[in-house]
Every structure is written in C-alpha cells, then in structure tokens.
Length: 180
Image (tube, rainbow, N blue to C red; front, side):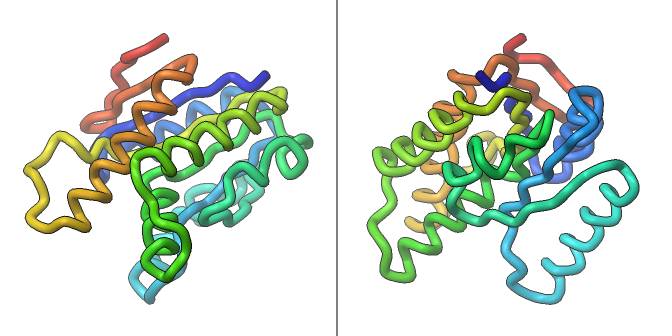
C-alpha cells in the first residue's frame, strides 16, 4: 500500500520545490507525473523550466493530463516514489474535457474520480506525493465557471487530504505540517 503525502499552498509558494526535495529523500527511482498541458508558448516555457529543475536529479517524467487511475500500479511499479504535480491542473483538465462535450463534472463525479485513482494507488508499494493549490483562501471568483473550478479543486483536496498519511502546507517556501 502506498504512503500518500499531499503538499498544498498558494501559487508560487514553493510547494513544487518542496515536493521534489522530499521525493528525493524517499527513493532512488523517481517518477514525475506532469498534469500540465502545453497550451501556448508561455506555458511551454514554464514546463521547460520545471524540466530543467529536475534534469540530472534522477527523474523520469510522464505526462498524464486526466487518467491518473491508469498509472497505478502498472506504469509506476518500477519506481520508489511518484510525484504528481499537480492535482489543481488535473481538475482543470477534467473540467476542460467536460466543456469539450464529455460527461458533466460536479462534486460527486470529481469525488468519484479522486477515489478511483486513490484506490488504484493502494496496489502501489511506494510513496505517492501530490501537489495541489489551496484555492479557497482568496476572494470568491466573479463568475460561475471559476467558482465551480474552485469548488471542484476544494472537493479533490478534501478527499485526498483525508486519505493522505501526511499533509503539508507550504507558504513563503516554508513547510507547515498539518497532518503527520
């Protein structure tokens, strides 16, 4: 059964850097699961910067934008630690898929999807570290789609946080342990 660690915080809080450093203490065979789609030039530059940060540090990268359950355990079995960065973009991708005509995404369906991949991780014998944004600390968004997105991410974070063995909140590059 996997050890599950959730790392959350605001945008640019240092959560991804903390996750990388933590993962590197958990094993030599490391898989980075990137959920970010390459949508435009600016996003592609961000992805390249993140790839550069991992270069030479023993990481293999796998892009997986929506189907997290398919990773476990077959695609992850050779790795000691799997780092998923990030759940916030995963929910974004699911919401985008819904807008493109696939099944409607709501709290129930995003919860079911979270439970599916969490159940799949139970067959994995290693550490799974998930990065996510804490999106509920700011102002209420001014439009229905942004509010729906915030709510869906909140649902995902609650489900993963409750199942996680550890939950770490990062602010200003400093980790605060919420659950240990």
